[in-house]
Amino acid sequence: AQTVTQSQPEMSVQEAETVTLSCTYDTSESDYYLFWYKQPPSRQMILVIRQEAYKQQNATENRFSVNFQKAAKSFSLKISDSQLGDAAMYFCASGGYNKLIFGAGTRLAVHP
Amino acid sequence: ETGVTQTPRHLVMGMTNKKSLKCEQHLGHNAMYWYKQSAKKPLELMFVYSLEERVENNSVPSRFSPECPNSSHLFLHLHTLQPEDSALYLCASSQNSGGGREQFFGPGTRLTVL
Image (cartoon, rainbow over all chains, first blue to last red; front, side, top):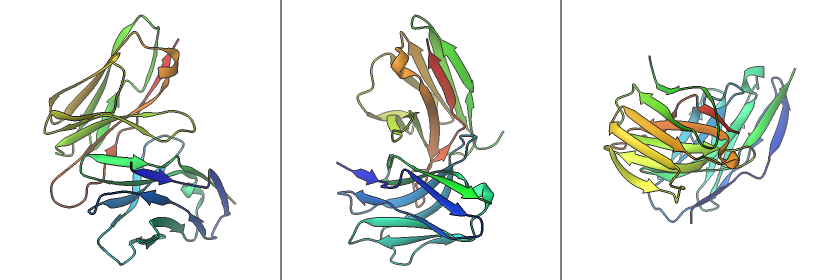
């Protein structure tokens, strides 16, 4: 069975600092993608960043970057220069066509 | 309208009521999904439709009945629900050809079953 584990239910960071959210996954698929989604208090889930498993280069989107360790099945999200608007639930997800498996989420608080 | 829309945003219903949730995607995608989000639990995939055919049903109780009349619309028909069905119901869509595969989510319907 495919599983995604986020071991940090809650994290906090000071504004302008850097924080890393952890994610591990287990999949039997050879062709899969990994995603980080953000769900602010308004509840609209939005995509933060995605990584194709066949690519070795870590994905980067502005202040967001990932550390993808395929052998270890690890996919962490680094948020640099944290902003108040980054406060949200963050979900890690793994999957292929027609199916994504989500982790339980990490609630990130950003302190001014 | 852009993206994925859901109506209603909030719904309160009794256990004997029948109601429907509606989802519409304006992204030209060919797959749509229903998820259930409960407090402190991972998102639970309920139904997947690809090219308007149901391809996955994750052992969801029959009191939830999906309908996908075309690639842009998805419904979730509800009847004789239980209080434990109270949750946020999220709809998503994706384009399952070529690259990407990311799912785009609607704002959700907050359902309360009394």
